[in-house]
Image 1 (cartoon, rainbow, N blue to C red):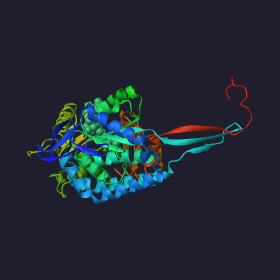
Image 2: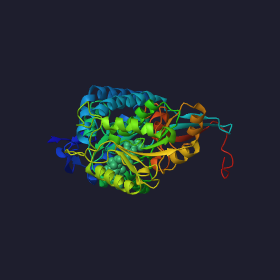
Image 3: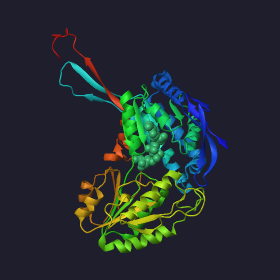
Image 4: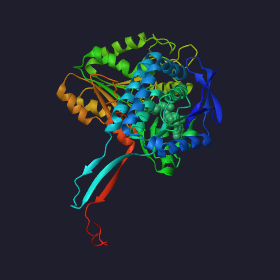
Length: 487
Ligand code: NAD
């Protein structure tokens, strides 16, 4: 079995305990990983705090931080195939996507490398003639980053990049399901030339996550995962009163009007729900389609769903791979069963193929006559699409907003004025019009409601890792007037 190590204070070690990681494509053990216990969490946070206050990091100029991040981006690009391969092996995410996503990972670091020396304070036109007041924008301190198993390299990059650009230090806890890519990332990070302790990687499950996010020396918690875990994170942060940014799940509507380019909308819907084997927070998992085109749309979608190539995640031809865990598959099967009992009709899929590993086929459930079907409200985190039809724009909007989540949304129409009306009224952090699942380091990403708060990507993300300090300088040489009156 392959062996992996944690990375604390610039050194690699086995960790207090070890566990074996399973290959989701076969269900077999394939690697041995470190499992952080409280002592490892403490060591990592202590290392990050020491690095934060060390002259080697605290006095590194923003421009120099940017150069280090550029170097890291180059190293990631050089090691891209190995990183993609490990993510595929340990999480079952298909190689087609991990190889494409790794290019974005390098791009995110380049974006934040360039941004590092543009994160700036301000001079204030203060309302007192004998004062100069300015704002320094300073790093918050030690950041605890906690990520889920899907897209770990990407979801970690969108935290590490802005946090380091801002001058913070980071302890990242990988997911216990598939930590290999981030442990390998640590080996690459180690070559970039950052001072020891600026970035640390530990593994482990809820106990390690709780110890990290409640640690008294952590100033900010950047979390991606499910809403139930987010509630724990918020409770944990009652201990250290750390600020939080929460990127959670979604039940995103994909709305298709009867004037849409159907071919393009069908392709975008396939990408929105079946790409990444549906294990994507922005998955367009509710198709809201106009009744006039519903039959044609569903027929075309069914044809494409049934033609999807299901196979080994490491094969470039594979379009849908296994789910990451048996638990994910059990949840999908249960929700489908309950939705059919509530009146939903199975259009395609829904049964587990006879092969080893946690495979699950592209599945479509028509819930037009089953408004109470749980598949309309629960996140599957798998390739399962629930369909509802509508007659009017107001109905489409009401269905779209009938969710506690609010991460992404898709809108297919050729009517520009309608698109503008919908954009204003949709409650979601992202609206894609006539496209879906596009991301960029330049554009902020985040949600409303149960989808969380805070933004990743763009300038906004870097500001999440800073706080301002107001500095007052009295310019008068006269004695300070009445000391008992606030000035
Ligand atoms: P999860 O919430 O179960 O776990 C996420 C991380 O939290 C893991 O590292 C886990 O070990 C840790 N954790 C668990 N309990 C903890 C606790 N008590 N304290 C601290 N940390 C704890 O999520 P998952 O099942 O790994 O991933 C799927 C979820 O992630 C889905 O809901 C999905 O929508 C969401 N997600 C969101 C985004 C986004 O950007 N909005 C992206 C990807 C995934």
